[in-house]
Image (cartoon, rainbow, N blue to C red; front, side, top):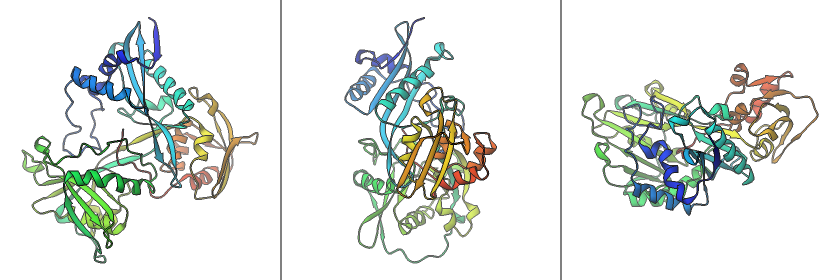
Length: 431
């Protein structure tokens, strides 16, 4: 068998898409309760296989998208594996952005699995990302046991929670000086880019949206799920500072009746955040509020008279991260606590330039990371660096799990203080 790993040519895009699970109607997520899904089912139903017309449209769109970098595996000239990297950016500690390669849409045909096709495609995407100057790769893992072997590790998390309306009383607070308004999908499509840009500037882990990200918002019903409704909050000066969309799906069972599903909610000020939730958790003729894909540290819990009323029903990691260029990545984020740390990375076979001992110095806006002959304070796996990078992982837990090995007294604590961020990193959508 002759294997090639390379970008597919335009005339090969039909075969390329046919390998991908979402295009051929095969499962694309492990059979587990999905924290990003608001319905009672573990995950949404599988799609039907894509038509030739749909694939032609995707191929035409891909040909004109400079941020889309497909890769394929060919065995004896037949496409048996497919993946892609998307070039965009993510917010890092300090409010800056880092260019990333977002690995997406990955599949290998059942007849050619366990033969190194996925590793070959990953290596090609890593090499190409480094050439483009993208020091970090990220992905959403469809199955938790696959991507750690390529250096990825969980970096952001999400939960799905439920709240019974009769338990949703909020603690007293000052009157809201702003106003709420229900708008149609056209106005929501207009408002979301503005609001998201404000949120992303201050939220570690948030992604830059692709062009047209909100174009699919509609006032039409989606089967029995009902139409999305759009709720806007403005401050006392009329400035947009909050936006949510929600739906009221029909249920054939009494247990699921009266459910309000909050598909998205963002706010730039506490007053807007509280006002949006105050309306949604006390909506007429409803019984239960469900919110999927939410951050683990949801402030609403601290606004409830009974914090125990908010029940987390599903949780999982969200984006996984992988540092492709350790010194470049580490110098593009900031550190709230100044410090100096020498650490060793070894065993990175896919990005061997990461191996060695590095000296990280952070002092306000001045951050450097260079090779050093100094004895290391600790040894760290590339997987641990991916989890630590956005500030949401516990250095203590990683040390107990063997991903950090300290060599000097207090090294784990110093690393923890330098890297940790508050609030936790979170991304409101994936790719």
